[in-house]
Length: 88
Image (cartoon, rainbow, N blue to C red; front, side, top):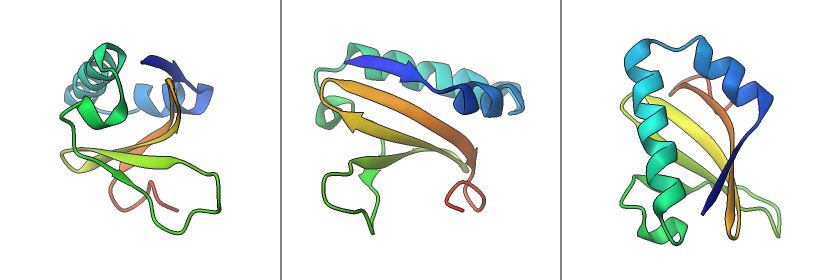
């Protein structure tokens, strides 16, 4: 898969602790090597309450979440944040 990053994701990532940055880089590497979102082996769940045609997912890494949009074969990482703040 092709992995893309938004400016807001990169900005949010810089403000995260080093261990979260490392985990996010590992997740991006796993996503880039996977054939599809189902074959990654990561904790990925499709978000609820979406409109027709939207494909937003959350990727869990400890107490932090990465919000991504999957448009086959590209995944766009939108934002990263703590569990309580990222969904707002």
